[in-house]
Image (cartoon, rainbow, N blue to C red; front, side, top):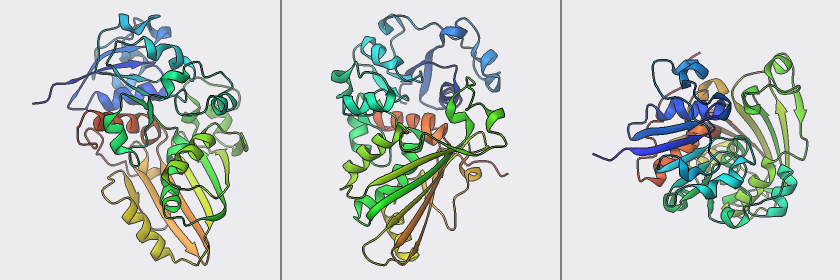
Amino acid sequence: MLNKIKIGILGGSGYGGSELLRLLLFHPNAEISYVTANEHAGKKISAVHKNLLGFTDLSFSATPETLADLPRVDVAFFAMPHGAALSLVGTLAEGTKVIDLSGDFRLDDPEVFESAYGRKQTAAGLQRQFTYGVSELFRDEIAKAQFIANPGCFATATILALSPLIKGELTSGKIIVDAKTGSSGSGAKAAANTHHPQRANSFYAYKPFTHQHLPEIEQCLSRVGTLDSSLVFMTHSMPVSRGIFASCYAETESEISTKELNEIFCEYYAGRRFVRIVEGSPDINWVKMTNFCDIAVHASGKMIAVFSALDNLVKGAAGQAMQNMNIMFGLEETTGLLFPGTNP
């Protein structure tokens, strides 16, 4: 029998931390050693995340200045705001694996990072040790990695939708991505334009041409193949709590049929359990609360449409992080994650 993987969670009070707890508490090979949350230090986790009442007796602890003061763990998940991990990751005990859910270590170029996140990359040397963790694309690298930069939610939906096209050199000219997200993507703390009462009966675009996930999408797709096409990336707020829906449009050099395109995607994702190729259109209700990304493809002449849907807090954050942990520790990558969504 495998020894339990000892786990620490840094920043467990937000939605990402809550989902990590919900998933890891039922992982057969996981044992959570500590969960930090400064504003809730000393409180029972179930007093903050009331859905976990009766499932854990753990309490939140404060985050020390040096993480070496925390109990030794095999892997530390960082679910902290952007910028927090830059100074903390390097203080962990030597040999500890890291999975960071923030954007701190996703971008290779410090200047691109500063432009995207509005802060200096103060840990550039450490960043070079991070592997970008799209589980379906970089499984071999993830298996050998000590540090994982978990992709963003928009980035995951877009990269999974476009990778077969880029790998197969099927695009010509612009690629247009029209992506939409639910309100939980903005975090647990309300802000004027992001909390749910503002969004519940509304729909609007935000960060046109400037969303911080665009450079990581371009960086990743350039690793998959040659990104000759320019990428137009637009994000929108939709009036639901959970979910990402990305509509991606591209033109091909030669005409292609929907059947041919579907076969390309099925072959590309063969053996990738968490990508499902569906008919018609994905629906965020089918993937909500799961680690699945559903993709549908259509073609008309030289025009291609690819639609992808996922849960921003699971496949777009905590679920993919746990999938990456499974790969890092040599487990079947579906461990603790293979369950369907609800209907309705």
